[in-house]
Length: 70
Image (cartoon, rainbow, N blue to C red; front, side, top):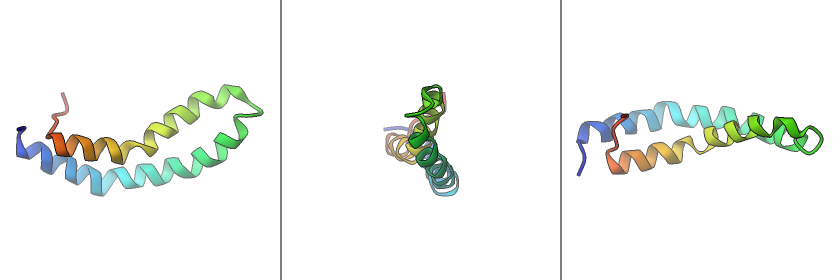
């Protein structure tokens, strides 16, 4: 079992940061993803935005594993 301090850290990041990041990325992801059909060069941006959408999942998994930053 990991250090419970990391659980608390990831819990705070999960509640106070990850949802804002996900909401921000979701808005732009939906718009840009439709444009990727016409402009394939934007696919790199949509990949980054998709990672932002998945950030709450990453935080929740790190919280349950008590994963450290390093």
